[in-house]
Image 1 (spheres, rainbow, N blue to C red):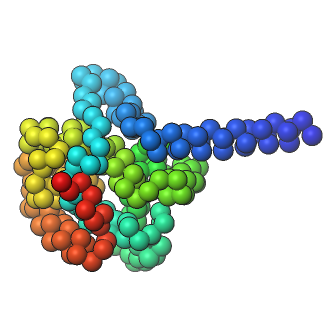
Image 2 (spheres, one colour):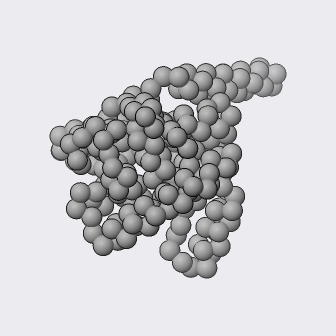
Image 3 (cartoon, rainbow, N blue to C red):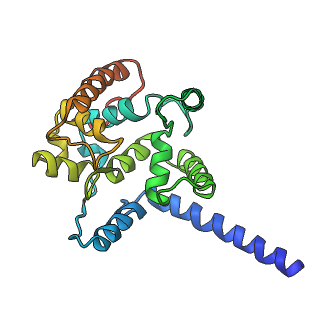
Length: 233
């Protein structure tokens, strides 16, 4: 029995050592590939399609400051205020889901970053528990600017398109720093399902969502709910 407890203890210590080191390393180095990118490539091969993977790392200093404002407005308006979890949004989502309305998520940008970079897609309790753990770690060890930078570089923004640099090139044939405020709002608008919605040929729903995000961006910037000055030159 003592041997069993020693093995378990060593496994737990090793888990914490590896994951903490992993998070510390990614505080400073670019995230070049994520589990989701790998999974999508496998899916493409299994379906007999050519592998499509567009991704390149862009420093947040080379992005327009409103790139972060757009995703904050669309995905997590309390991003700069919370510590990884927006409990008011979770409570509201739970109420709406229990009332029979359309299912609504409440994942913050920090949670989505943890999921995209360190984990796999899914809804199991194990994965959710690990998401909570990695969210707490990155909030503890990364500044908000780094979380936004990793998010904007790793999030899926279309079929085989990951990150704002790849999206700028694929959709408008430009560099990320040349994106307009409206283009950033459009990218943010398709994020709930970027493989379904189009940034270059948006339907009525995406157009309405883009306009709403566009208006929210300036409000958040004026009221301290965005990363002020980030990326401005």
